[in-house]
Length: 253
Image (cartoon, rainbow, N blue to C red; front, side, top):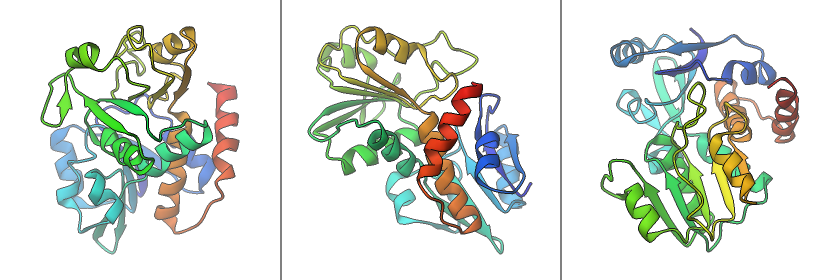
């Protein structure tokens, strides 16, 4: 494989379609279990890859260099192989920042709940800090260090103004799942769901029923792919291409 995407389950992925819009190379989807992942990374038999759930943090020990952005986030979703040396980047930061900016979501001085605590959540948190959110709370089912539980979330943080879903709950094929019930969050104005398949999730549908602004992750996916391609083949693409691809993909989804 020269270019492609690795992850555990990739049946939901649109990355192959998006990269076909953006560049003239073959982009493969390669689902890997934990053992296959280790072998793949050791062999380094690729030119450049994207990385998705659950390997955005697991890839780091295999890399020779990581850019400052990825280092501060603690997760890598783009790797370029330069003469046998692996260089790691994080394009989720740009993708999420674009999603916020393009949909006119105001983050500054807002209280934000981030659902999930994986690699995508780390990039989301970095963007929220950059955009000066007043308070950022990561919500985890396990209630690990640095996170709160969903029980605590409902009991003590129903005044959150923005909720970001970075979990896979609601992603195809499990489209009837949802990470949270929005009814108690009466101060909430915006729901940002990083899931892109389906284009509307159960979470965003509930948000719209409640009169909230709701955005799913297809724009973010395209934006981060655009930056990944720039790293892959060392070119610069105009930002307008993101919206062109987004609108064209919506016609067929």
